[in-house]
Each structure stands twice: as C-alpha cells, then as structure tokens.
Length: 458
Ligand code: NAD
Ligand code: UGA
Image 1 (tube, rainbow, N blue to C red):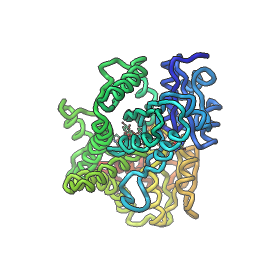
Image 2 (image 1 turned 180 degrees about the horizontal axis):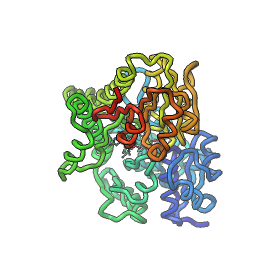
Image 3 (image 1 turned 120 degrees about the vertical axis):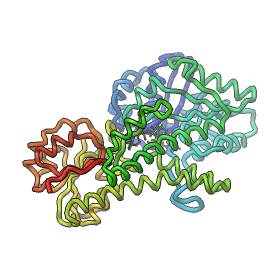
C-alpha cells in the first residue's frame, strides 16, 4: 500500500506504544512503525496483547496491527524507510558520575541519535518525544549535523503530556499538543509537517508552537507544577492531622477558588511514577548548573516533602499499632503507583513495603495488575513478603491493611467479611482516602486516613 507519510518511533514503551497506536488509528493513510531493542516487548505488541496495561489500548492496537501499525526490532530498516522519526526512549535519572542522582541519563537518546546518523540515507525530521533536559535538541542537532553529505536532519521538540491510566483518552483528546522548532525556514517547514499530523484529530487552537527551549522547559515545568500541588496538599495533610482539620474539606475549599482549581489536590501517601521525581530532579540539576541555588532548593523541596510523606505514613502506622510492627502481618492494597496501570516505577508502595520489612513486619501484597512488577521490585527481599491476587485471601490473618493505590476495586469490597478474616484489633491505614471511614469504623476497624482525625476504638 502507498502511504501518505511514513512515521517511525524509536522506543515501544509507555509513551511510544500508545502514542503511535493512536496516530495510526487517527491517520489510516500513514504508515506507523515502532522499533525497540527489547524483543519481548515487540512480540507482545505484535500479539495484540500489549506489554503494558492501559484502558482502551488493546483495542486501538488491534485496529492498527497488520493495517498501518507495525512493531519491529529492525532499527536500521526502520530508519531507512521512514521520513519522520519520533524518539521515545527512556531518560532515567543518572546513577553514576557527574550529576548522579539528579541529571538525566542521556545514553539511550544519544545511542538513538547515532543509529539515525548511521542508517539514514535521506533527510529526516527527528522529533524529541521523550522528556529531555533543556538544550538536548541542540545536542542532538550537533550529532546529526556531523555527516555533511547533503542529508539534512531537522530536530523538533514534541514532549508528551499523557498520564498513565488515561493515556488513550489524553492522546485522543489532549489539553494541548506542544511543538518546539527552530524559526529557520527549514525548522518552520518541519514544524508544519508535524502540526499537519496532529491536525488529523486535534483542533488547531490546541496545537501550540514555540521555540525549542520553551518546549523542553515547559514539559519539566508542567510536571513540577503538578507534583508541587500534591506536595503542597500533602504538607497541609500533616498540619490537618495535628490540628483536627480535615484535608478533604480544606482541599475542596481551596480548590473552589477558580484561580487554583480543584484537580490534583488529593492528599496521598505520596506521588510515584517514572517521571515526576526524575523530571523535578532534572530541573534541580539545571538550576544548580546555572548557579540558581535558591530556585534549585525551592524545586527540590517538592521531592523532599514527598519522601517525608512516605516516612510519616509508616511512622503513623507504627505509633498506632502500639509502637511495634515486628511479627505483624500487613496487607498492602495496591502496588501500582496509581490506579488503572500495572506500572510500579517509583511507586510509594515500594518504599512503604521496605520500611515495613525494616520494622520486621510481614508484608502481603495484592494488586489487580501489578503483582508481576511488584515481585521484580522486591526480588532482593528474602523473607517476609508474599503476593496474593485475591484481596480476601490476602487479608487472612493480617493485623492491618494499608491502601497504597486508589483502585476502584478497593471501594467495593465487603469489609465486614474482611474484618472477620483479620486479627483483632484490626487497622486500616487509607493512604488514598478512598474508603468509607465511618462505615469501616462501625464495622470495628481502627481507621487512619491521611490528613484527617483517626477513628479509633481505644
Ligand atoms: P519506557 O522505558 O517504557 O520505554 C522506553 C523504551 O525505549 C524501552 O522499551 C527501551 O527498550 C527502548 N529503547 C531505549 N533505547 C532504545 C534504542 N536505542 N533503540 C530502540 N529502543 C530503545 O519509557 P516511557 O515510560 O515510555 O518513557 C519514555 C520517555 O517519555 C521518557 O523520557 C519519559 O520521561 C517520557 N514520558 C513518559 C510518560 C509516561 O507516562 N510514562 C509520560 C510523558 C513523558
Ligand atoms: C504525570 C503527568 O500527569 C503527565 O501529564 C505527564 O505526562 C507524566 O507524568 C509524565 O511526564 O510522565 P503520571 O505520572 O502518569 O502522569 O500520573 P499522574 O496522574 O500525574 O499521577 C502521578 C502520581 O501522583 C501518582 O502516584 C498519583 O497517585 C499521584 N497523585 C496524583 C496524588 O497523590 N494526588 C493527586 O491529586 C494526583
């Protein structure tokens, strides 16, 4: 079949897979190929049963497979045969050398850039889809410009704003699509080519264009703003617990100010996910390198409060359960970093589980999608942790439940039955404030929400 455009994406992960599946479904006249070094991931995508859990994803992928959506490990061929190349590789925090623990590890994107350089036999538009530090596009240009044989590469920044669990909805109906380009004639032409792709389904007013550096920084700034709201309400939750105020009431009242808005004000055990922490630390690194120490300290506080919130959660458990957790069985309801995903990267549950094990508690983990990842995250733990799919089985013989993930499933369980299965006095620590605390208290539980007065029978 003759396609109107030929698109490649390097990286078939949480962003590359869903984003390309949606482009393929919205643009049936484009060919969309996704390449990855991970054969297992590629096989899973090709089987129609994607390697990640995301509501609505399976259907979009199945629509495209064999029509205009292709997954492969043949990177050289992918680069040769496509004109528009998205780079959606992982950009984790660097764990070694200068900037370790703060800066982004850029080895994956540099390898991708070098592969493009090696295999391209015609000019390409190269699009940064991953979240990169400011000025990465410039570095990518410098690598790609090193060929000097008439083949030209135009680098654009097109950061992704989707959230896991709502990825398909976010991609189909985005708040905005951001495209950063150079303002040269070639740069603007490349930008218009990318605008035309999104214009197949996104209204023109929602497609924002900017210079490359604004685009790169806006992505980091957006994640900083979002995470900052969570750390702010979590800081307020600590004040609520000391003063008798109720964090849900405070959040509702504050959020009714239309200048503030009501979303992203749910107090929790802490934010997780692969990006908030790494992107904020990346911004901290940028500020420190530029000598903006005060700004760096301000930004970093968002991560520090998040760590504090997790520590506080376990300390509250310890204090409530008579200052010892040794030998007690504690069931974690949920291990994913948020509902509707199987992703556990940076999930607060990982740290909570480890802190409970440090207290010599026994930890039972249940989650409808994340048990495989949970086992990998705690693979080094030799004793004291078990994984049980059925929540009723998981709570059997437990002294406490700690809600880690806001899965709807946990709102709908039969808590009288659960109470019967547990050791008394039975405790619930609701790290997401999703349960009916009064009803639980009446059943006989001692209930410890976040940022609210505990409801205890003694
Ligand atoms: P991921 O780890 O799920 O996927 C990255 C994939 O790239 C992996 O499958 C890896 O094997 C592959 N890869 C790495 N180098 C490669 C190479 N040279 N050739 C071929 N394949 C290669 O990561 P992700 O969650 O999809 O995130 C990707 C980027 O998008 C990150 O920069 C992240 O910050 C950003 N982002 C993520 C989300 C999210 O919700 N996960 C949202 C917005 C932005
Ligand atoms: C976040 C952003 O929302 C996306 O816009 C961005 O594209 C993405 O990061 C990224 O760059 O990777 P994501 O991490 O998938 O998306 O999920 P969020 O819904 O933002 O939740 C992040 C964490 O904050 C979760 O652990 C969630 O439970 C927690 N959270 C969220 C709260 O504790 N309280 C809230 O009110 C909202």
